[in-house]
Image 1 (cartoon, rainbow, N blue to C red):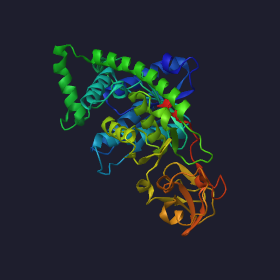
Image 2: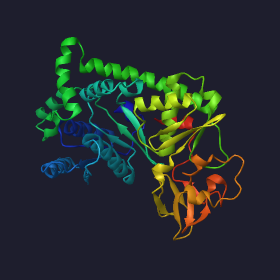
Image 3: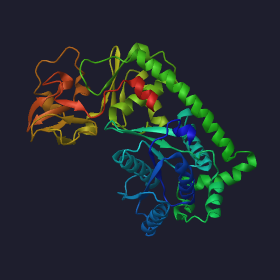
Length: 413
């Protein structure tokens, strides 16, 4: 805790406590640490509503927090049935906890991920063919940046502790905790990997060894990110207007080693779209191959336009064509933009109808395909402003987050 939070400890930190043995043990450990350090604790539980017992489990955590003297919040989440259940629950949990923390002025939230969680994650990433980025798995401290410019720090103080040791601690202290039946459901990848680990130890593949590999890959990831940030600083081309695009010098990008190219491309896609996660490795490599051939392409809601001297990464028009938001600053468009127009005006992509209303364009305007997805302010069907093309006041539409160079964004991943 001292290494993660010191030397000047915050006045209060958050804890994500599910009610399982790991997180309840973390609650007890954090309670004993925080009192002499003068650090306040605030606890949050996300009720996924997937089991009838989940309400009672959240209440159990709340009761333990009340006994220890710490405030507790329960956040509700309902799955919409789309995508992978465990992945959707994990992402929703992180998003909700981040909002909860920022609303309470908490910069740090503890999660009870263990050495066993680390090992399982490494095996799952290896099965997907992940590189350094994936095998590095979980870091003790991660800065989670939001599209609204806010940020919080996700801390994992127990990554070097075995799950069995935490359970033993909880049992010794007679802590209440629950075992989620989904942890034994073989339909889920993590459950199957957990079972496989028991047999892999005969080959010398242990949670301890996998965690050491993740730690070493984490060091490599930091070094590779520094290299990518240095290249980004050299080859990113500044634009005279805020477009939300990333513009790179094509000749500067071409000779760079492939791993760095992939890192730059992944970061550019995330920066443009606001996506919290980088694309899958196979899809990213396929896009890079198309770029090398001069063809460009789309991925994760972004489009790469290959010009004679530049690579432009822009929002894909199809991804935002049907979205809109109030243009008077009361709504956010595409998670990243808000307008400063009049009540009744709307913020949406420029699109073909807006393009048709443009007059002469600046010489350095983005190409047609990239311009279609630019944020534009409309009064009914009439185009009022599109600052990315020099139409209207420069601040008629602004980014919700601070304008960020690609190099800084690479460093923050």
